Image (cartoon, rainbow, N blue to C red):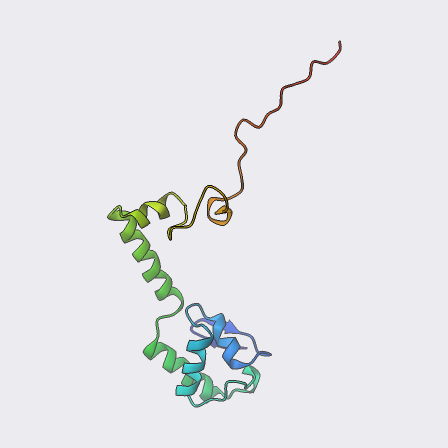
Length: 128
């Protein structure tokens, strides 16, 4: 199993798909990296030599921000928005959609499971 940027990438997939398992690398960026490393994108990961894997790793380390560092940058940006109390920061704090989506209906992914308010029915009198 090849390890790139601390992530074990799958052996049986094409290298252009395998690279997308690294946080911060999508298909487009994966293809650019492979073009720089002059590696055929349809090559299976298990068929790569140690030299080619090192080449890919060097290109990623030199030119791109991925994995933990990228996550730190993103969480820092969100924290900054919360600290300055911008609208987007307040939406992040309240765990609501930040990009203008409606919340009267939908938004279940962000808001969580529906909570019924006052949903108890009147109890029927039982015979004694």
